[in-house]
Length: 469
Ligand code: UDP
Image 1 (cartoon, rainbow, N blue to C red):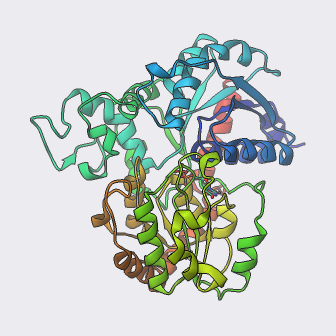
Image 2: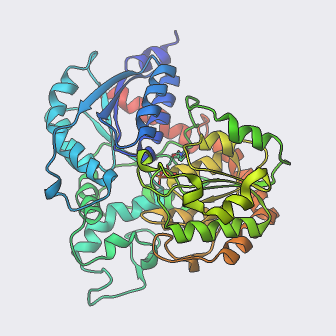
Image 3: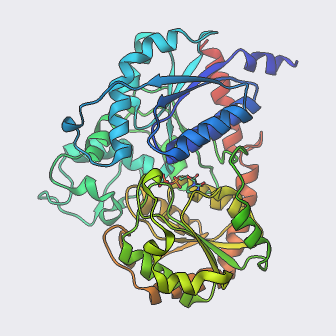
């Protein structure tokens, strides 16, 4: 063993994600990348999970990576009447936070002793007091874009200065210290509400706590978000934030199941001819919008694979496909005409990597964006809620996708089938998007190289964790 890998193998890191596949997936990818760098990894998973997708992903991950030690944080019972959200994933964040008092014995039972803890951005305000008390370095893994980080870290200040819409300083854009202003229309809608809500409180508490973390890791890379990363690290940070370390793109780890049905269908299509349509793991579209989308896909005459979802949590998505998409659409898409509609979990990264995929109609969850970049697939962005408009702005600025801003928020505004058909055709025939997506793919795959920013960031992180021992 070389001297460097001897050093790395003495680093022992615990990873602690929040709930939902959008948080679990990047943590599993980070665990795989740390293992590939000879780091010893303990993975702390809150138990039980909200979705079936999470429990399945965890069990196949631990089977594929036996070198990672699993630890369960068994959640304490929670009084739901005190919650200020009805979103099952947000509720689970609350329960995980209140169960953090179980962390001290769990962390001290881990052997050999830990060099550092890497905590999800939505849990950091609850976890930092625990890690500080035992003198354990604690890094935040920010599971969205660097652009979203700029809002996350400054929201508590903006909020306090009352520069929010609805106040006397009502504006179209909000100034972010040392960064480009962000249009108010891109803000996650709950942040603009007058009354208290879960997301607002979470951003305020976790945004404030981040200042005390040892570093903020982001699954992005310099060629993809150059201005934001540059301003985050090179400007004088007014709020004294720790370094924002780009560590991406983390390669999609190979442990998911393959799904022979769509893969067999895909195998019979021409190269680059199919658009993949999915809104992630927790976005349920309205029945009316599902039908408009279906009409749009059929009208476009572009071949498609569509993962349709009508419930937030996968176990509840039990309705027959025909009841969800309607008989007309069922007939139009049956017999493998120009499309395939599926209402169950697919291995998205595997599908995006298939050579027949030439476009991705996506809500722009950050993992979906990074997977499209990794596979060089141009995007049609249709943000539904949360950080997704800010992520869509990153996609548009990088020149790898189209974002029709007039569509508004998917969860609020209705978009007609004809408009969807037009944008789908435009995405699939735009040669400049294809060329840009192909060059961003090359940049993504080399970003973790030794002479590139993410590679240096990852190495610096390992060196720092080794030094902290
Ligand atoms: N995903 C998948 N199959 C599905 C739905 C989602 O593999 O049928 C994966 C997707 O590839 C991504 C993650 O689930 O890695 C969803 O995270 P993202 O940040 O894109 O969106 P979210 O689900 O958090 O809104």
